[in-house]
Structures are given as structure tokens and as C-alpha cells.
Image (cartoon, rainbow, N blue to C red; front, side):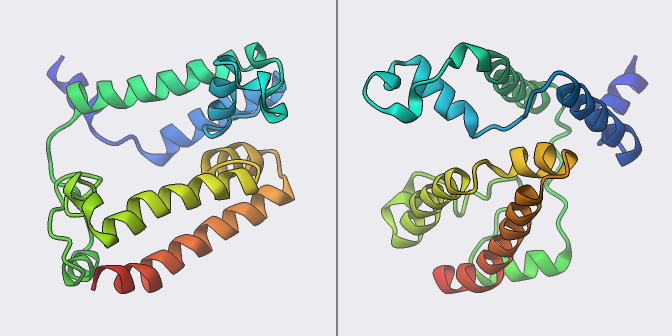
Length: 189
């Protein structure tokens, strides 16, 4: 039993997780479904009655309940993983990445979200306003403007060989590189 728990706690290799993801995508294509996390916000707003005053939210949101369940499952899966399957090891980062982040004043690498950036005190600084509030707005605007989020385009769109999704994913990567190499040093120095 201990060996099984150890196997479950370790990261799954690409040759296991990749085919599982491909199988899920093939099933979604077969059933005519598309996956995307950001589309759930529209569904939730429509279910709460936003369609009464805004045309964008006026659609049959009940057809998207499966996607809401998928989102709930992803959140619960992350929670279960953190509580029961986490080995409490620090985040493994390359030495060069750690050096670059320490130059920016980011020193806590225990969690996926560094406490030096993601905390309530940070919201009172201009750097926090830019990264948390401004970044959140840009991500939301970008997901709406691109017609989907990174998961929708990179997983569903690319598996369906959609050119707009390829363009969106290239844009996501370019935006990430610009943020990492140009904007973060400007914001945190």
C-alpha cells in the first residue's frame, strides 16, 4: 500500500498523462464538446440571471453544466492533491531562475505562488496593484478577446487543429516571455 501511495504522489510521466489527455480530448470531440475554463464564467453569470439585462449572457446555460462540473472537479482534484498527495517538497526551480527571481526581491520558493508577490500586503503597493489587479484584468480581457483561455485554446483548439487557437497560443507564449523578461524587471526593481 505504501508503494502505491508513493507512486500516486510522484509526478506522472508524459507517456501516461499524455495519452490520458488525448483520450479525454478524443471523447470530447466525439461528443461535440469543447473544453475551456473561462467559458464557465459566462455560464455562471447566465445561471445567476445576467441574461435578463445583457444579451451576451442570454443563452441556454444548462447545456454547459457539464463544463461547470468539470471545473468543480478540477478545483476539488487540486484540493485533494494538495491535502492528501502533496509531499511538501519545495518547488524545484533551476538555479538560474532562482538567481533571476532573487534579483527581483522574490525569495520564497516554497509554493507555486510566491508569497513575496501573492499576499494581501502586496495589494497596498503599486507593484501589487499592477501584478495582481492589472494582470487579472489583462488575463480576463485577453481570454475574452481571444475567444477563450489558455486551456481552451491550447488543449481543445490545438487538438481540433484550429488556426485561431494556434495563433492565440503563440500570443500567450509571447505575452509570457514579454512579462517575464521585460515587465517583471521593470515592476520589481
